[in-house]
Amino acid sequence: MKRSEITLRCHKIVGGYGEGEALVSHEPICFYLTDPKTGMVREKSHELEGKNLANKVLVFPSGKASSVVQIDGLFKLASNNVAPTAMIVKDVETVLVVSAVIAKVPLVDRLEEDPFETIHTGDFVKVDAEKGIVTITKRVSGYTSA
Amino acid sequence: MLNGEVGEGTRMAMELLVAIGDAYDAERMIPITRAHAASSGQEGDMYFVELLANGDASCRVPTSTNPVYDIEYFESVFEIPKEEAEVARRVKAGYKQVGAILSWCCIPYIAENIPNYGEIVAFSESSATPYVNSVIGARTNREAAQSALAAGVIGKTPEYGLHFKENRRGTFLVKVEATLEDEFDYTLLGHHVGRQIGYGIPVFTGISRRPITEELINLCAMLNTSGAISMFHISGFTVEAPTVEDAFQGDIPEDKITVTDHELKRVQEELQTTSGKIDLVMLGCPHYTLKQIGEVARLLKGKKIHSDVSFWVCTSATTKLLAERMGYVSVIERAGGHVVADTCIDEPCWHAYRDKVGITDSPKCAYYRRFKEAIVAKPQDCVEAAVKGERR
Image 1 (cartoon, one colour):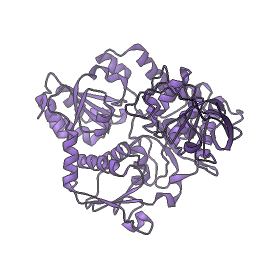
Image 2 (image 1 turned 135 degrees about the vertical axis):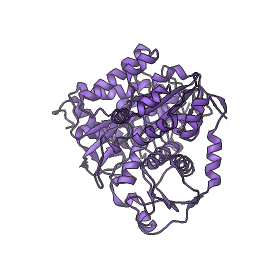
Image 3 (image 1 turned 135 degrees about the horizontal axis):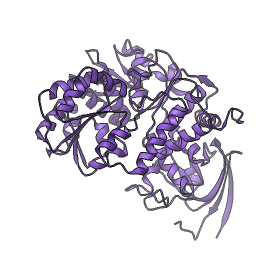
């Protein structure tokens, strides 16, 4: 298995440190449509349907859905210790910021490279929001993600 | 403040506002004069308000609250699971402890917490954000319940977005050719336009009669439910749009949609999802005004609601008091209906109707799907269906 490490600067929104296997979604995410006990995505015909976001570094374009359900959704995942360990997004808005603060999940945006080109599901990612640094360890071959 | 010398609750509130400021590259915090927190009685809401309350935070500016539900009233009518009622009680106690205005109302901008033109505020809740921006000309960004509460506690908000005049200009022209006769037509218009354009600031032209309060409330609620629209202009009628040029602050864009009677009729047909026997009628999403409750009382006077149908009107405590004084509540109750204060249609108190067919005048209410099937129709048709026990 070939490995290589990439370090990118990013913009901190919610501080902290989180690491884990990357889970990439090209579609917006509504945390209310996940199983609060396991972190399994159960939104019908979502590209992550059936995948588990517990303890992953979640890479996605933006949040969606009303503030009430979104915040409650991420809060319940965090209460059950199945929230993502960090979140990397492209478009951020107030509801996602509030969700991350309340669930205490580090949140960053503005990576110096397009996260959807640089990060793939299964890569190992460290997000140091305080320092504004994301480190990606690529897993190029012989790997398929759960 | 971030270092905690003011107490843990205030520090949390400040941390939240700083994170939002970072997200939008705000350069500074600016004072607000009032806030509205879209409290909801969910666990995430309870967690945050208790965190503030237990950390000795208290509101520095008037901060009103959204409906949860009237626990005692519902406990007298249905079985409410103990754990559910406990969450609602704790949410209410939390907001009381931080010194919020206990309005439990989703349209506080007409009675309990009214901004003036030009005030900087932090108003969450779907109809409230566009109403205070567009109709009143106060300035608020799109807020979550917790960011609005945090702003109320700190008395400040990060400066960005709709605080700046240049960000309040129209982005999309909506030519209205449809005839808008009543508040339900404005509901259909809002539902249609919100869905069509999604986000941005629509500018409506072609509206020839000054819309009344109830029509504007419905337009706001639907634009911000089927879309994410925090502000709009109605040329000739809303405060920042004496003319269409004013609304766009200059050039009128090419992008436009035209709304005709045909489109609104199609939306109405689409919302009539089923017909036949109904089990309940749900009015008051957003909360009904005194005028709307008076109209329901007029339609129900001397009539009986069908014995198989539950009939509910949701409103604020303020309005219910006046409606009692005016005799409207007793007319509706004599006909077999309920007028309930402090309550939202999207709360666990409605469990009993999970498998029932309902009719409502609000697509927003139907969208939350607290019951099996929800037909959307004009208010007078909802009342007629209540009496007959069916919708044709």
